Amino acid sequence: MKIPNDLLYTETHEWVRVEDNQITIGITDYAQSQLKDVVYVELPEIGSIYKKGDPIGSVESVKTVSDIFSPVSGRVRETNIALKDQPDLINKDPYGKGWIVRMEVSDKKELLGLLSAKAYEDFLSKEN
Image (tube, rainbow, N blue to C red):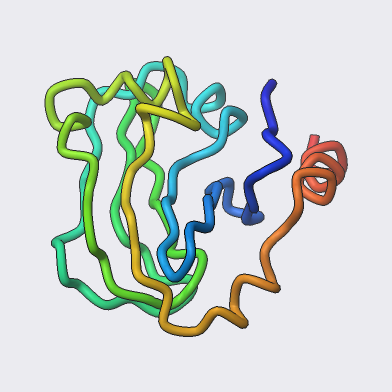
């Protein structure tokens, strides 16, 4: 299972790539492996504003439906529309082509509450 060191993580299995005042969000390799075959992704509306912890969309697999939670407060700037036709990109490339949403961060201090790769790995080892 991959846990890239250059990303931040949540206990609800989202990953976050920080790029200046914008973040890219997806679900972790662990999350996609638990879901199995992703068949549909519900994306948020561009321009929508969310608070930290709000559900911003969902990922549906043959097994279940899981919410995607906003790791920080902010406004949706872009969604990965390729997932509409190819939701399995989340399974094939969760940290690359399988990204889900890009947001403008409204409070950068909230990023401090996210987990490092090591902390996420430790969290997973306690969860399993």
